[in-house]
Image (cartoon, rainbow, N blue to C red):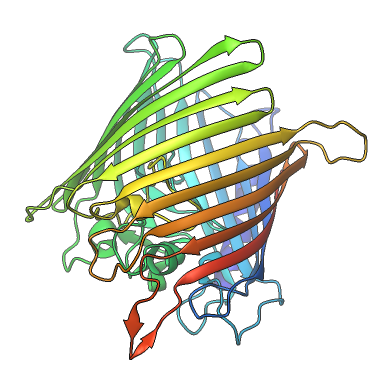
Amino acid sequence: MKKLSLLLSSLLVASTVTAADTKDMGKIVGAATWMHIMDGKDNGFDPNTGSAYYLNLGYVSPVYNGLSFKISGYVVGDTGLTDEDDKIAGGIFMGDAPNDLTDTEVNFGEVYVKYASKELNVLAGHFKLDTPMTKNAYSTAPNLYEGLVLSSKAILPKTTLIGAHLSKMAYGARSLADFSLIGEGTTTAGASKFAKTTRGEFENFGTLAGLSDTTSGITTVGIVNKSLKNVTIQAWDYYAHDIANIFYADVNTKYKIMPGMGASFGAQVLYEDMKNSSASPTLFGVKAGVGYKGAKLILAYNKSGDDAFVNPWGGDPAYTSSIFSRNAYRADVSAYKVTFKYKVPQFYNGLPKNLTLVASHADYGQSSWANAQTDAKETDLAIVCKPKKNLILKLFNAQRTSERDGLVVGGNVKDFSQNHTRFIAKYKF
């Protein structure tokens, strides 16, 4: 209750700031999400219940001499439709694991100051960060970072230069699943075991990595170049002080074949140099796509080296990642994925607007992980509808087989597979 009172008071104060100096009063922004698990296998591995709501409310100030700010907060809770006796999808809630998963969480979200000019952009505070090794899929509350980001498009032609220092991170709701369900207890899927207790609270990167000592954070530099027509090249380096250095680069291109038809190609590389370790995880990837009017087919491939990635801070750029699978980051994996998307034309008035059908299948092969028993696979089917600009409805089914499937635990052969169906509604204002 104390957090809620402080949050509402802050938003009220923020909405009046700068009102005397400008006719623009700023704007109220927000989002609402309902995420409901419809079905899942009753095998103790596949989450088969969970119904969460996420409400985000914020205020964005008017711009004054290039300066503006944002303050926001959120609440995540149970809709009352979760069956506490079944396997709960903990990755959609923000409560403490394992006993209080569905407890309501009220907290601040993005709180930052921003400066923008033709020469320089500055962002400081708590924010979401869209870079290859910080952007991650999220369910309700997203991952947030604390730090300072500088970027400029004025130094080199058709090039954006980025520099940042991140001091802390707050895990979002999905980080619990990133570690347990998706990462299966490994360090490859974007969160460590500490996601069970620190979600929503800003922690030192060393703590999140499971180290006994804190670190100075993560220093990042990046370059995004669009000098060549229809080609984007980017390269990023993330130096996690006293822990690791991570390098990522990719090139993506697209071109028109004929009216209504186009093609795209991409290639990527990810490398991690671990401090105080001989491990040097690597990942290579390529993808190719062809589209004709509303249909698109994408083929992707990733190959990892002899070492598994250590990735407790989010980031999932691999071309072959699926809804629940991040196996491309494990050791000795050859991953293949095919995706088909089709935007259904509205050939009669009763059909919903902006209806898209998506189907994908990925085969990750068997890694060298000691618990691996078989090839990991995932097939995802989704219906996505966008009846209005700010409303998205999604129904998906994920059929996944873990590479642990068939592992003998306590004398019993375990079923580590999923047949998971979920409905999602998202509204932004």
